[in-house]
Image 1 (tube, rainbow, N blue to C red):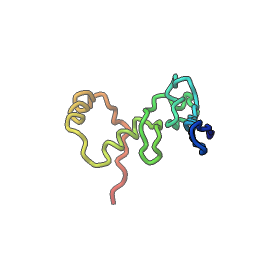
Image 2: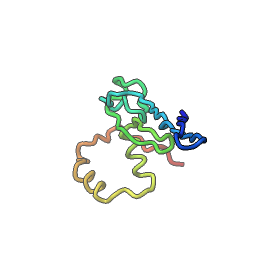
Image 3: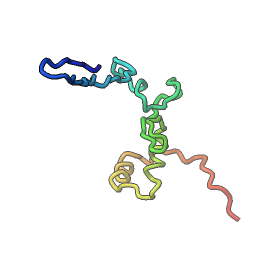
Image 4: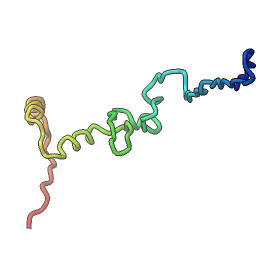
Length: 112
C-alpha cells in the first residue's frame, strides 16, 4: 500500500511504496505419519488377505512402486542373468538331502 507524506520544507510530496511479503501456502496431505507400510504412497499391494501370505516386498522400477511378489519370482529374477552365486549353490547342496526325495513316479517323457 503506498504511503504519501507531505514535506514541510518544500512543495513536493514523496511516495514510498511498501511491498507486502508474498503469501506462502503449503499443501499438507496428512499430519499423521504413516503407521503401516500400506499407508505409504508408493505401495501397490492390493487387498492384503491370506492369498498374499508368504509374499515378499519388492521394488518395481517400471512403476516406481513397491509390490508383492512370490519367493519363486525372486529366484527366477536372481537367475535371469544365468549367474547364480556359488555360495548359494553350495548352501543348497549342503541343505538338500537327495536321499529323502522320492523318485517313485518320475516320468522322464518319451524318446523317439
